Image (cartoon, rainbow, N blue to C red; front, side, top):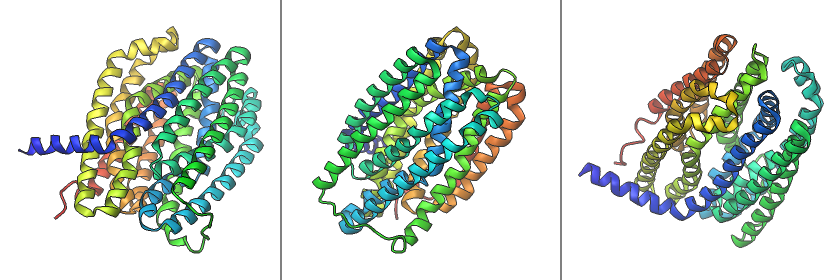
Length: 435
């Protein structure tokens, strides 16, 4: 009987998520697929070491964007999903406030990266020739932060058709421009393609959000910092502090690899493993993006019992999808690594360790839906994110000089296991049915 109830719950979950998940999946397939194919193309066009250089430039842009975005995308998704059903006026004001904040963060981050690009390249990465590429890549930071906010807003408004369409078009642009740029101008050409594609995608997403605001009758009023101070302190601040911990650590792991005895070649191997890990986490990430809006809407509109049912269903779907993907990528791992080039076959051990990390990482993401719905973000920061990042950093410092990419993958797995263990303790009561 219990098994039948669980199967029925999964079936209801798939039906609830179905249309939205389909559109979100289409966009993510194009986005993540274009990134994977682009990386494979660039690796074959410029070689293993130069591909490692592109990886650290791209990683620096992504780290700067995540560091400076202050959790705006995550916060706007959570509150748009709830408030647009309860208080459209406040939802409108909050959306417009966060839109302005995203522009300020984007411009500030780009200026910071541009002015420090030379120092990062020479002093941190010990690769002064990367300075011009990092300086050029700073422009894409503006659009990376802005795109994250726009996708977060559209997801909270459950405009998954718009997100999916923009993802497909943006993915095609990214693949064409980065791979084409690499063919014409090596790493510099690929970075140029990155900047142009990010700008074009920003235009697509901005147009989509403008249409969605008109459709849902959003207003032009803007909230003040004072009026939303409690929300910012309760949810956005711990989210931004998490980025202050997580982003530098993940970037530092790659910087340590770049400075290791085998340098950018070892970073290239690790990056290929992360690309394939993304394939395993692809469906769980898409579903949890959709589920965040669904779970918060359910909690706001239907109450506690329906919310807990939706939460448990999402955890079950996440476990099922990540397990299937893990088996597939694990079996095909050597063949997939070979696509990057023969030199990448040595990275299967690192890939295997990263794939093992997929299950605790996916389940931690699914279980975190409870903490964000309950606004327990400070607990997530102190009990999950900080211990996880400290473990990753400590293990990376100890293992990378001797084991290279395998050491980095071991550090990644260790941190994910620590986070999953802490998450299970924090949400142990949430998985039960409501009284």
